[in-house]
Image 1 (spheres, rainbow, N blue to C red):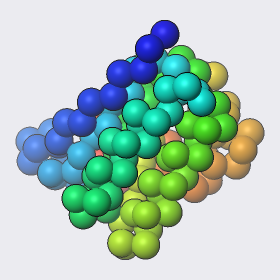
Image 2 (image 1 turned 180 degrees about the vertical axis):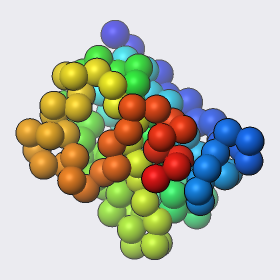
Image 3 (image 1 turned 45 degrees about the horizontal axis):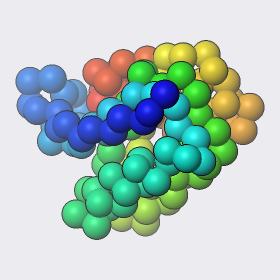
Image 4 (image 1 turned 180 degrees about the horizontal axis):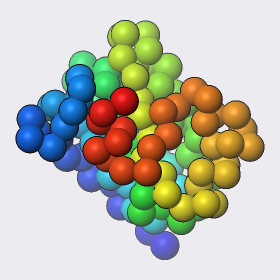
Length: 120
């Protein structure tokens, strides 16, 4: 399955906490070595634009490998260097288990919905 990546923005009516105006990177498909450059490009562009608080929505992802995790970890590192964060939305067991097995569930605020991620 091809990877689709789009960037939306939370507005004041759909967000809670410190998340209004936060970019939401919606990812659909399989995140693997072949498709990860697209995700890396989008997350890198947000970092270059000064966005240090990002929600990555993996609710449409059926598979993620170590290269996909690496790109998200890189985005988290960039965000933290700018006093920000990256929060991950994931519902698929195959995705959440990868975060749990690698211990990255402790580094990312995993949520089941965008609204939950925004409210953290």
